[in-house]
Length: 184
Image (cartoon, rainbow, N blue to C red; front, side, top):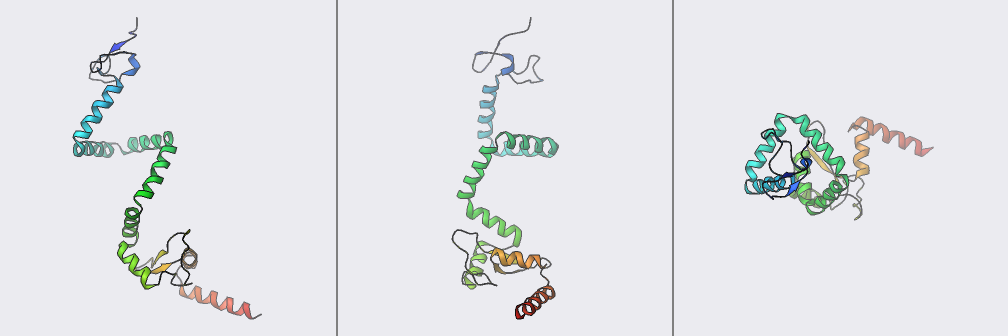
C-alpha cells in the first residue's frame, strides 16, 4: 500500500507525498515539505547573499542550456508579471539604464551627452528641430568605422544617414537628383 501522508520535520504537518521534493539523499524524498524547504532556502540566501550569488553563477556556468531553458520557462509562465516589472524598472531606473546604454554603445557619459545637447541648443544637428516632449530624445550619431561620436540627431535624420550608409558621395548624388528634379 502506498503511503498517503508524510510528516514534515519542520512544520510537523501531515502532507501528501507530492508536497515534498524528490531529494536523492533520502529514500522517500525530502524530510521537509516544499513550502518549508523554500522558506529555509530563502532564509539562508538572505543571510548569505554573496555565497548564494556565487552558487547560482557556478550552476549557470556548469549548465548554461538548462539555465537558459529555466529562464525561458519562467518568462513564459510569468510574462505579464515580467512585463510589469520591466516597465516599473524602466521608470525607476531610467537614468541608470540610459547611462549604461550610452557608455556601452558609444563610450560617453550622461554628462557628455548633455554637453553635446547643450552645444547643439537642444536640436538635431541636421534639421535643427527640437525633439517633442512626447517623442524620444535625440539619437547619438557616430561613425561606424571609428566609433567616434559625431553629434545628436532626431530619429528621422539618423535613419536617413543610416539608409545612405554614411556615404558622402551617395548623399551628394541624392542632393543632385533632388535639385535636378525640383527644377522641372
